[in-house]
Image (cartoon, rainbow, N blue to C red; front, side):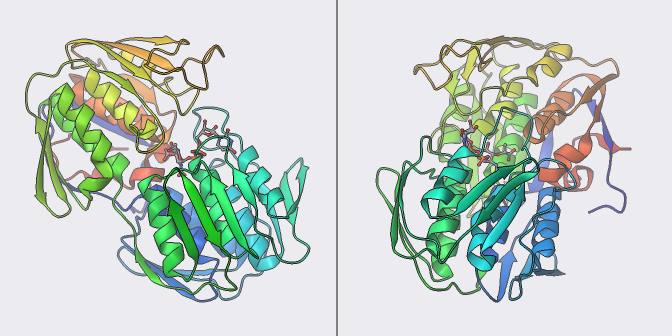
Length: 441
Ligand code: EPZ
């Protein structure tokens, strides 16, 4: 990390972006693996741990509980949770982060209580935590909803339960895993999320001594055990970041190789990417080259839970679609309000429109609820910036702004950079191997 974190980027765009970049370890697994480490009384070692803002925030939350954390070398994070002492989870400095609610189950097991502040995640929808709380109650926790957060307590060990998630929520599935692994008896959790980061978390917990089976039809069977053991585990590559570099290469007619990413985690990205006109070449076991194979053309696309097209892929994809000829449609079915960033693209010259109807092939949970969750993008449009300044609204939109600025002829200033760096680290340093003209201030 740089000594002084950047507060703004200045991007001089309008040229193809080419080169090579080392992908980060996945934020959305690394932070959960860190929480999992608290379940074992010993030293867990995470390899390929990304040095990003969200990991730093999670380090602070774990340290406040009494864990000892160290980075003995680049990408290696040690977490010693032998002596936990505090059940009070502080409000993260960033003010928004999804990790505190995941600590509820873990601290309940280890300390018998958990006091978790109410914090939001990125500003992309209401993001309630009702499934997490319902699950904890079914496992036997008493939960009081106070002004400053959730106060949970257990009387005796937590007991196994049968719970059907109303929606395959990633975070609530993780909460159920944390609650179930050390509960007494066998829990059945239905309708769970199966994202690659969830599979990695199940693998990590099983490597720690848990007995979790993922059955077909999104069902988890968790046989509770008495204790878990610390282990060493490698963080998988970040499929969201990799998809963003892919979209940037195709959008600018550049050529970008991303190292450190398992192609299997991009399985349902490649299809739409190829359909639009992107090209993919697997260069090695964890190395993928992305480029533009032919002139880009429009697509109709729906985001969904895994194995669907990830909601976190839609922003970089939308930037690429501004360069595709025809009318593209994106129907966002995971979050009710994830298109605010299109306004900024429009300021650069993109032709976009947001609709409250379900414009995809399925009616989603948001049907008839007046949420702006479908987008229409007309292309191709030449993006231009005459010294425009864009404020980053959330992490994923932030990288989409970087992409849009790289596409747009002229100079664009991007502010609110810490929101981007929470998930992508020091971008100026990390993109040195690319022909991206990005300076920090
Ligand atoms: C995770 O968020 C990721 N964050 C998100 O990435 C990602 O977009 C999302 O999963 C979906 O893949 C982290 O892993 C830290 P959810 P999470 O619970 O777990 C509703 C990023 O930038 N819901 O799967 O918070 C919720 O409102 C972020 O890296 C409830 O209604 O997402 C949403 O509509 C952005 N009640 C849907 O489920 C609940 O109790 C999916 O949310 C929980 C969720």
